[in-house]
Length: 297
Image (cartoon, rainbow, N blue to C red):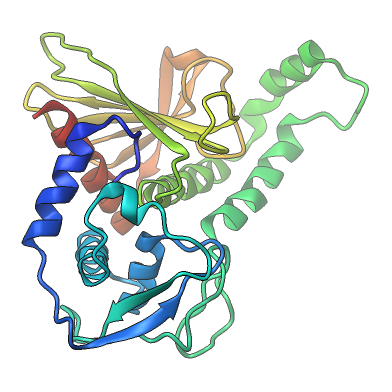
């Protein structure tokens, strides 16, 4: 999977160059497609696969096929597609024996529609907003004239009243959102090395989802990934979007066995919520492992 983490990331460019050179595509079998507002090459590749169960690896392979077919031989090229540009999509059979279907694609990035024109599915962002509203009924005071300190005291006095299942739903939707964030190509995901070279830790990554690619943009969600001494994902601490429960540290913790916990008291304690949802959890850990490998190997 590719990640847009900055123009100076030479490792990212080298990775792209190698994958681009290794990709082959049938140039005689192709179809025109006009770029629409909200399109990215990653999103186009997912829709072209026409399979909601397609893995990140399959989406990546399709993205490189499209890039090769259109001579997009650099990271800059794939990040610089413009509205109304005409590109070519491969018509050849792919790993799941399906072909690109242009006529049934959704127009924007916010609404997902299947090829049978079924009712549009709600996005993870829409679903998580509903859960946040439910949690806020417990921790946000009805009085609008409360100051910041009063609001914080009210929240901490009432946070234990929030049902565990709401935290569990919020955290699992957060995992799903993070999986989607890691596949985006809009420049709003910032990834930095944590550089925790301790006896038991090979390295760590700090990942921030921003509202735009500006350095001073609002932080929507953040994540801290720690590796064990073998360089494998050991633990992930993260905030789900739209709701920051703790003022210090993160809200949730996820270990390599899928144990999902809620962090309390600024990180000094935590309690187990459940095991993380299967496929979303596996996809997230796989993506984060690739990031660790790219940064520390």
